Length: 502
Image (cartoon, rainbow, N blue to C red):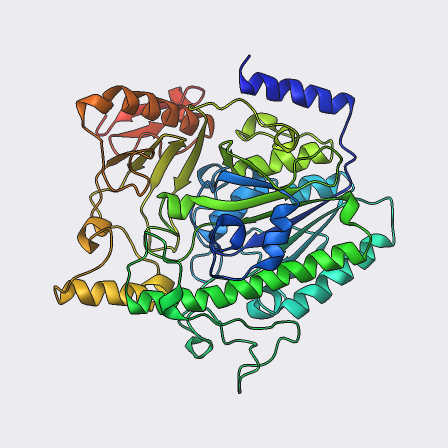
């Protein structure tokens, strides 16, 4: 019996003896990585996240389906990859990407079922009619730092939502708290520090967040991940990031305390994850593991649920919508549009270890000028990336381009100085069409095995599975770069890839 068969049987059992479903709290970090004690970082102090992890099932193979803010949030809220839901790039400012008009998010599905929905913090998706919540306190109404980094204000908004929900004890709720930490501060407000680590600190001119107790880190004691250059500017950058991770951690603690004080902790499924990887080289906007791999915990209030345990099951952000719907005993109005699976069975039992389990990823833009479509499949052993615009240079987003880390990479390269990094700037910019990695032997994705005779069968299997997923999710780029998708006229009911120039 396969593990997927067992999962199906598990779902049948759940329909006979259902979870005592009530509420869902989704906690989302912004560009957060694995900088916490629960994932063996011994430097950054994250006592509240670590405490949550001890009460949760910890996911060691959780992945985003896209490594970009708005597209990832849309994927989390729809259960569909960016090329399927239409949110290809950033929603804010001149970028103005939106999901397709007919897309229905989890908030609209739950709202129609009579479940109260709320969003506190960064929204960053559109159109509003597709992502409308009953209660919204976002950048649409307030400055982004006030709703995303001011953890005192976040606490008060959460309290207000929970008090309103408590007025009707028979009403279930879905609340998403979307922090803006540890996102970079950007070019507009550099006075607050690279990661807004000074904003709200109580320093002169920085304002004060009453509930935040800033923690500062020494640059030469940073736990440096392999994908970040071992340079002083990069270490200073990470030290600033650590401070904002501590602010995020304290914010998580405040939100969980509000949930507990309201008497709702024992009826609420709590999920913690991040939208994509950190704003560092090879991470955010990349489909390498630093960009795709995400922290994730799920705490279930039900008896028998796994706590302080680790699952190695391959898991995607696309699994969250099926999980939430199953928790509320609801079905999706278009179930065939989803390729994810409910994670509720994992909360009870680990499935058999299957080496062929896979997650998929799709990235097309970030900013409006960053056209660089990539598609990927990752199993426990292998990663295959298809760079569709491989003849172009890989684009660098604005926040990262002006960062101390990237400017140091750029300056050292131009000056032909030694660069203590596992890549060169040239290899980072110029990528081949296909990248194939054996993650068991090469976890840093440094040795591309595409084209090797010994990997021919592996490539054929992975590329075939990737193409099948792209067809299932109706990717309009699935014929690119060697062909064009024809889906009109005589091909209306039979979309076909035709050679260029046909």
